[in-house]
Length: 145
Image 1 (cartoon, helix red, strand yellow):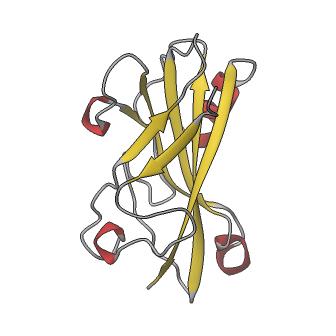
Image 2: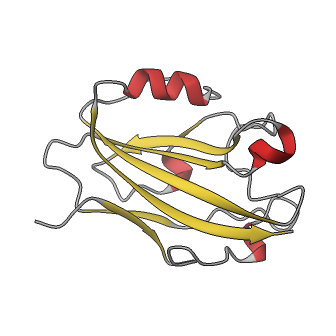
């Protein structure tokens, strides 16, 4: 059986994320796809962050938090959105303060339906997922302002 994975038609693993997805550019949401989830998956969750921000701003910067039912086509417009470190709900694209940063999109297959209030934090999402992660996968891309 194939392994759970997340992919994007907008960029490949390890590649440069196109400018239109950048926060200071068009801030378009990249298409993220989930493949081969475990059989009992009820929810997909996604965390996008920038670990390289630690050196520049002293923390891993959260760019996107969302979750939605695994039993639909998973359009991002139908997902529950968390709050980014920009202080906004929904997607906040790459915006490195200095040079090239790596962005990690972490996908999770969960065995429960989540019910968090829109605008939840990364910590709230991680706490709620604890003990319910059937599989996880990641997709990385780079971005230079």
